[in-house]
Image (cartoon, rainbow, N blue to C red; front, top):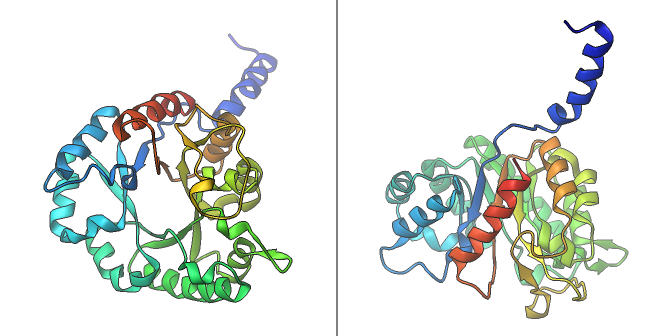
Length: 280
């Protein structure tokens, strides 16, 4: 029989694991931009079945898939065994796609990028912030939430501030959430663990890919900023990052491999094997 002292000692030892969600299954997903070059004709269902066979349980949609009707795309997802909680929608047509996303059953609409003409000035980001507040309200009215996905260009210096700081300050945190791409945060020269801790529960979704060593950081989005590799094969500190993400209740974890020197499916397998162990 446990006496009170032993019981308290065992409880204290167990608390960190309980607090960080140990033992709780975390579904892994794929941002389907990863397989964009494989999608041809009517093979989407087969590709999704291959993703499901790796072990992934959900996907994040992207703009090239929206040529399908809501009914057809939902049917393909259902037959593949995968679910889709979120999708990326282009800035220029975002508002027009809100009814489509709702009928598709998405929980999240994500804007992946600002128009390039708005990257270089505080005014461009302020216009985006006002627009995001509007979209956030519209998404909320349709039973969804709105999030913005970062790259590295949002972190360039703009007269003593950054575009990311402007977006944070001038958007309503109850309407505008964040999807953090940990690669692009790292490429911008920021610490993804520190930033995730600072942003707290405003970050609800993560994009997961790793960064090769020995390349310079940058805040310019071009080919010279692309040093992608699979999760676990680069420099990102995954253990503290994922521990913090679980503590903060991140809702969706998506592997995205923008480019790879392997086949996209082989790349997804490598990241899945590594991340499944880290999140178990």
